[in-house]
Amino acid sequence: MNEKLPLVSIIIPCRNEEKFIQKCLDSLIDQDYPKEKLEILVIDGSSEDGTKEIVAEFVGKNKLIKLLENPKKFTPVGLNIGIKEAKGEIIVRMDAHARYEKDYVSQCLKYLKECKADNVGGAIKTLPSKDDVWAKAIAIVLSHPFGVGNSFFRIGTKKTRWVDTVFGGCYRKEIFEKIGFYNERLTRSQDIELNQRLRKSGGKILLAPDIKVNYYPQSNFTEFFKHNFSDGLWTIYPLKFGIKIFSWRHLVPLFFTLTLIILAELSFVSENYLFLLLSIILIYFLTALLFSFFIALKEKNIGLLFALPFTFANRHSGYGLGSCWGIIRIML
Image (cartoon, rainbow, N blue to C red; front, side, top):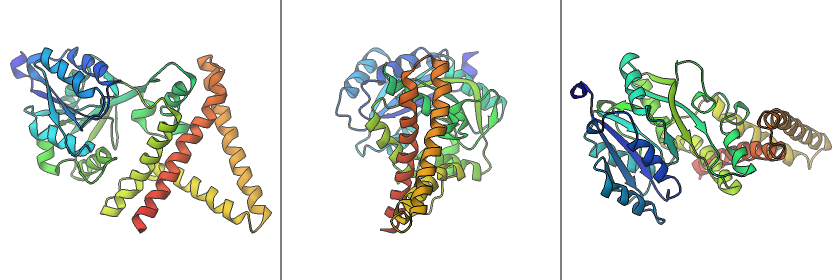
């Protein structure tokens, strides 16, 4: 029976992931997919912590795992190194910041075959990286519609649906021969751009709720802002290369931030603009506070009532300012 199953190559680009890589690899070794039909390629981008040593220890104990080098450090370069090295006819792109359910690979292949999809993935369950109120708030914001809009792979879905992108992704290797590899000019958003090319070529992307993965985001408020800023930047900056990857929901933080900046400038001209600026900010925080109240009530955590409004603002302002910087960089 196993002879008929395809060989699967799991691709994990990483850099400085010593806090997460062990749990990630443990979850992959525990997959219920036949081990003789599985290989795990970890592509390290010159890590400066203990990531390589941890992976090397796994390599010494498990023949499934292979450690590759990515001297250029960037994620899309690492992904392409892994794909070109892969022996499998199926490529599963994974993230070191995640822990995968034991049927993740087998479920991906089931949907890839049964639904005749070209890429499949699941909704992520975002969990706090450590046990404090700010880490919990960050995890909640990244899985709440007010924080991330209608991004179904983040907020979840109760039904299988066709979408524009998924977390990670499971592809037939031949698809890369058809549409090309990850765009190495894109430090971020390379997965969105690849899926965009896939859809333009007639391919279909499926999101299935029973493909499950736990994801661990940043736990530090400053690092979270930097991540959001980078998200916003790489939503807009690909236009520099003639690549449009954003949809209208990606532009909401940009328009919101630009509105506040323009009104702040105009407030020096007239108090009416200052009143409008303060009114918008007040409405925003009241809305955030309302969502935060119900979340804190559900979670039975009063600290979230304080932390969540600022974490929502961190997400939106960081993303919006990053998008503004993307426009500036295009013009320079």
